[in-house]
Length: 111
Image 1 (cartoon, rainbow, N blue to C red):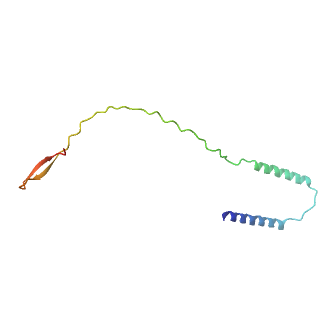
Image 2: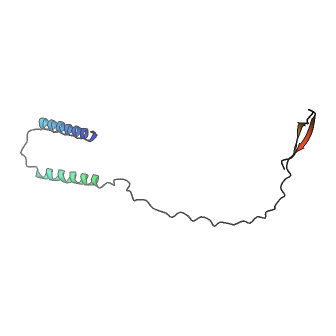
Image 3: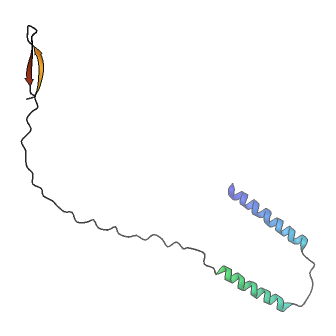
């Protein structure tokens, strides 16, 4: 749809310019100015050639692949390990009751 509108717009622009030139063109005169026409053609050719030979901008060269750097060598460290005895279990105190309802404290350890 968008490309079609471009074609129609450019066609209308060409038709407008062509009709404007046809209406405003002066009557042809027969003169013998071959040298002036040749000089104008040469100057126009030089200017057109200079414009066409301008650099067009950056050129895509493609990606350059570089190998990643190798990783540094791994160092192995040996550490002395000391085995500590396991910590003593933590004990706590609780209140309990005997068969007659008298309260007393008891030390409770998980082991």
